[in-house]
Image 1: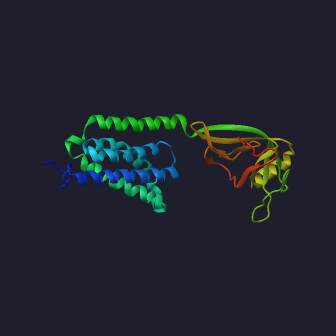
Image 2: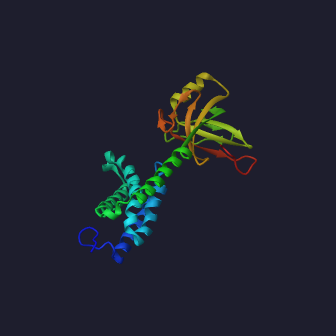
Image 3: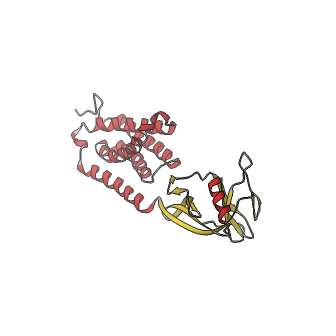
Length: 258
């Protein structure tokens, strides 16, 4: 008679169903959590593969263990980076940790059986995770620097009217350019930048933006530099660029600020 762990039969229908439901539901939960906030795309395919392995657990647990291993280890790698600050971790991290801990415990127990240590499912699992990693590095989180010549204002007004000040009533530096009859702009609260621009007395200044994209679609941006003053090197902040931005509609229905 074959056993899974201590006294629980691997071939039992209810054991297979329970294992399958755990991997299916926990993988779905991890996928949802990562879709809400993930530092890198490749963790999402890992979570999806984790959930998909739940169907295999219901039919062939001996194959499912190998198929589940590397997706679960991929999510575990995500948690390793959060461990030094785990005391400040939120519910998101706690749920991930719980799912990973239970999955790893089940996999460790499953791999005690020789028939679960098959090369083919392990190779398939590793190949799929590596493929997701390669796609992530090749097509996601790509950084491009976009450069524009822009006008500026420091007196609290812009071509479209007065701009929002801070809680002390201080006006931001507003940089803007006309696009399609409207204006794309950013407002930055920076006394250093304000002093620099006032002294320069330039009409137009050079502004650089860090633009990130996934699969060719722009995901977000930050200000790289204004008139040579560096604010962000990629995602690494060098100076405070607190403020706001957007577009003001003109003659067209909307303005494309890309």
